[in-house]
Image (cartoon, rainbow, N blue to C red):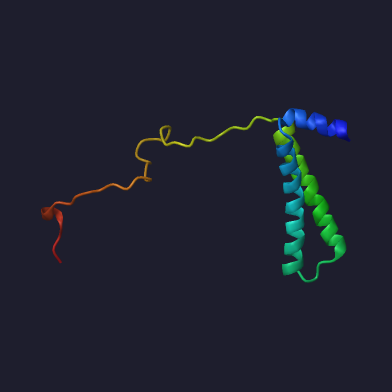
Length: 105
């Protein structure tokens, strides 16, 4: 087991990152169990353990795919330079209206 952890840490770069990934996987499962117990009164221990297992396995799989295999991800643009002209509604404009264009009611 120590050799496996050493290989994973070698790919991650830091033992602290591995520890936070493991803590995150278990905290999500424990939080889910707590919320199930609070809001679903008919839950039993089989459902809780099954939910914890699915949560730990899915979080572990996603963590493995993200941090160990280093699958490249594509980032979306965070600016508006590639947007078509006339679609920028994010900035408020200060507009002055002439007195002659105001209709009197």
